[in-house]
Length: 118
Image (cartoon, rainbow, N blue to C red; front, side, top):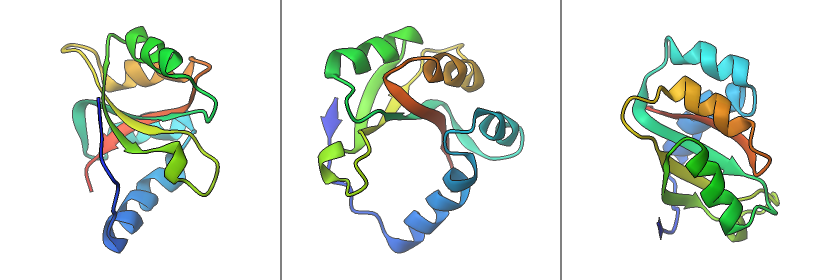
């Protein structure tokens, strides 16, 4: 997995916040939005808990046969004390909604949501 510095533009932050703010950590809203909002098939964004170890993150991704593809925001870069935010790529045939349900049951994860297209 590669880690890249995250330098968001103001427009990107506003667009991201618009969808994520209403759904973040609220599975019922995320699943409802899947029917109407555009998202990247086969990808989910996973917010890990601050204390999640690398092995726990690997195990969480393995729960859905996914691959931790990219660390979007590292815990060390955050002022809010949150954990790493990562992109997880799903295997072919696994629906995003199914993956979200399985991932959110994992104790290492704060929330999971689709990779929304803004």
